[in-house]
Amino acid sequence: MSSLSILHLLLLLLALHAPQAKGLPVTTSRSRYSVLMKEIMNDLEKITTTPTDSLSSDEKNFLTKESLLQKNLKVFMTFATDTFGNDSKIMKNLKEFQPVLPTATSTENPIFIEKNKLGDFRMKLEEYLANIRNYLKSKKLWFP
Image 1 (cartoon, one colour):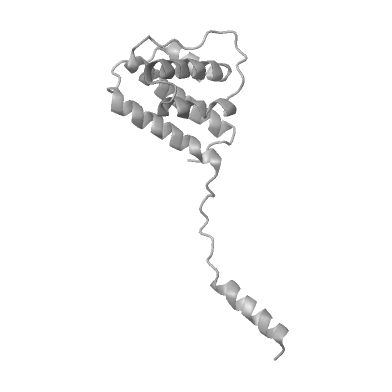
Image 2 (cartoon, helix red, strand yellow; image 1 turned 45 degrees about the vertical axis):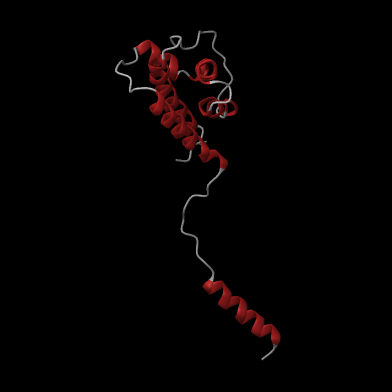
């Protein structure tokens, strides 16, 4: 038997024993957004109680507007910096969303968060993160 035939047979045998793909999604850097959101929510749950109030329809409207996503993010980042510090995990995770959110085009004012009210911050941030998730899904940037 020639060495070429043996090589061909050997390659065929190796191919048959190679591990097969399981059809699982490839983890990309884009899937980190779900992890970032989960980390933010876990940190908030540790430092605040579950809000008992609910958002008004106007507040929900401000949080859902695509044109205000970037402006609202800045409001949340300012509150996080003032409350937890610039090096806090919440602040660092919020910063990660800046590059993927649309540039602010609205002349409307962003959401208002009551100063030193962690419950207000948490309630509005939870709704805001749900809206970011929906936005990222619509732009095919979300992998759960």
